Image (tube, rainbow, N blue to C red; front, side, top):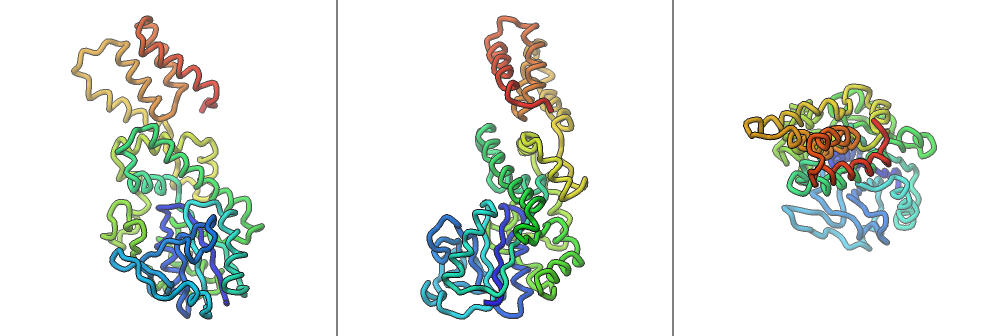
Length: 343
């Protein structure tokens, strides 16, 4: 085998757009194993068949939602392959690289192995993930735990690019630059020993039903829209996104190191006006000061800012010392801020 590409990325990071494009630049068809589970015993069984992009093949593919077997597992293992692209999502890159030994045992030693990490800025990646998972339909705290796990995995990929690039010989592909800049795509191909012809650049995979916002009805000409997904979220989704992003102290510095200030992390303080706007909808109700302070404090709780929530709830407690909800919430915030650094 001439080349083996291991491609890793987070869900909703443009993985399949980039993978389809990469496949299009090879001079011969590419064996493509999609979404391999590195914990599985056999990557020829533990992968996710999809509709194959042009210039690729696999022993199993998905056509019109149905799995079609083209070859047996034994037949595909015995064929001569010039190129193999093996991808995974939502896995640590170190875990993914453990597949190399198994791939070698199945297909023989590759002349060149290339490790690729795809990364999208955390604001738009998480915005797309929140919409795709429909997290606005479940309890806020449960949704926040799910989105926090996503963000931790994103940080694993970002830190791998920053700190382990040379050690692991990683070729990072930054989605935000890839989608807009042909010169950048040319540079990527040059580093991989390919010539960029931008084949498959407009191909829309059926993986994950396409875009989180337009599914497969994407207007490729409006590429800037892919970098403004945060603006498409509704108020509850934005609250979840801002809360999640501000739960990780390192996210801002890590993001700026890779993406600069163009995709800055929205702060909790920048979101305060939305919180008060929500409360303003109840301005015609005859709320006592304690009720208003209580509701404001709880709004800060929902975005994870327990320090501010405690300060405001303390004022509510002064207004209504015997209020059971106010006392319970204030004591809860006091416990939480013991383990939460002041932002």
